[in-house]
Image (cartoon, rainbow, N blue to C red):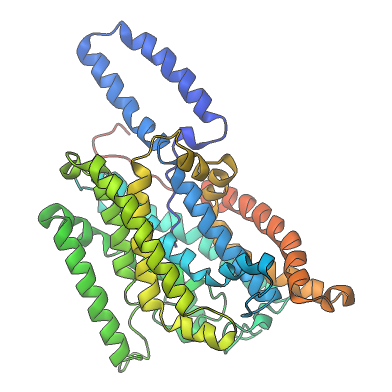
Length: 436
């Protein structure tokens, strides 16, 4: 899951107006400077202005997180059952919330690569600083959520919705403890019974360790080689996973899903195409073509979803068996959309759609929302089932009732959770050469 946010000053509520006012006075002051110092002053403000253009990333992140949250609400209340009434047909899309994880991963590659792309495909702060920053970004909220779920489970059995054969029990084996504490759920899936969503956090955490090699390949050999290597790795790991579902002697699997390295690289490629200096000469034309590519990929993805449409639990299992086809298509569409959106001016209608203030705010705490929503939804649902009036409702009224209660609670709690564990516990690297 991604959850790397470009939180420029302009991204905060009311900050855009402040930034415009501040740049007005900076412009007046810079007019009296010598040419060299004036150019230096302008360069110092260039990055915040560029960051202001990327608020749509938070909007996309918010939409992906909301898709996952409402998808789980649907599964609690309705299960893997498609709606047939015409007015309720759009709700069927909630059963495909797995695709929201694909979008998160592409966004993660894009956001992580963006600073490196802008600095000649190098991480300015150094790799040790990069990994320290990643650890402080991912681990505190994750560990806090792990503790929260274990606490809630003392009062509400979160395994009641049956997402894992083992369930979340009062006593857990040592394997469950260390696989969750060490973020190994993507290779020890049999122990991922505390929170099903944790597998994607483990997957992204492990992909971070490939990032130095991926950036080196991009800088040394170019984008074509990077894409070819990622496709070869994804193909090889997928074949290995099929041949050895459990690796000999380890009782572990190949990191799952084995092809997610390709989605991560698609995000890196989108950042390079949209902002890399080698592509500057034909960027405008390329961004126009990206719209065509995104439309074609979306149509193809819709066709695949229609062919493997989820109508009941059996068809849901069948659709999950096609993730190796659906996930790369979703990743390619997301990457093409990122390249296309990066070419739009902030005032264009589609940019404004993704840069709505509410979406940008939710995108700022989307990682926390992804982490904490399941225990909240499970608790609310179990409480509602104790009410005969709710328990006797049909599936659709159950969904809307649960959504009306659980969604605001999830959003409110995630916002406060993020303020404590995402904003108060953080670490930012100091650039090399900067004063202490």
